[in-house]
Image (cartoon, rainbow, N blue to C red; front, top):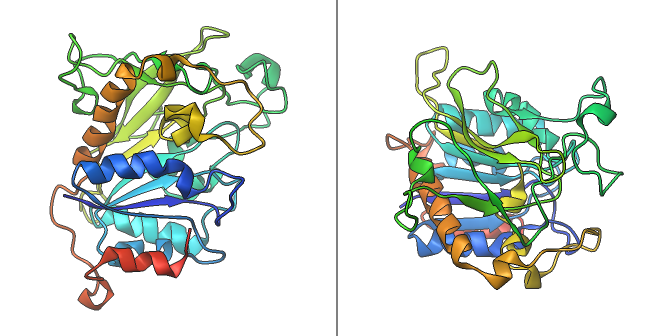
Length: 304
């Protein structure tokens, strides 16, 4: 069992991608036996993120839904220390510069690539239906639909399942404008899964894993996964009847609602992630005094 912090990078806002819009993800992790604290961030240095390395968590699932101000320097430094102490981290961002606070997270920031003004959008824009969103914006399908997943080489343990004939997770939830994650030039980074644009046919990465990194002292860093979009995990993308913030204008699809069986297979991916990101060795907190006996008490630090 892992102690998991499921955290957004925005303060509570009922008309944004606040943590309540990831309730099905939290429930899935709890059903798999994990202890989950789900919360939005506080203004300024977040009382939990800024001390995540000493609070007894095993994993951080960071839904980067901000527009650039989602982490302070203190928050980011604590997350980097958390990985150095063996903690597992999952990041999930979205199109263009959404979630670009992740740039502060060392190698995990490098594998998350954001908008580059030097790139001509006419040559790279993929989502042609929402012109106010620029590159990267890979169109894998409508919210509420599925997208096929491809992978190179032997099946990675994160993609294994006993529910398909091929033993592999073959479908992810789709989204009209996914972001860019890349393993290019990053030691110990590997592309886990790829998708293909439904508009241009471009192949893009759905997830990149970091495994085997060490720090300057030779200590192994915690494993990490970077997802191209948090919409792989949002309630709305698992069940469109859950609704979305008012600024979501694209018409949803109905594939998942019409046939939820492939979503049940995708839930195996969520469980695999939680198993794989669990520290390979027990994490030692900096101070036992900073380790709460009941992680639920942390919710009182910043109600979501």
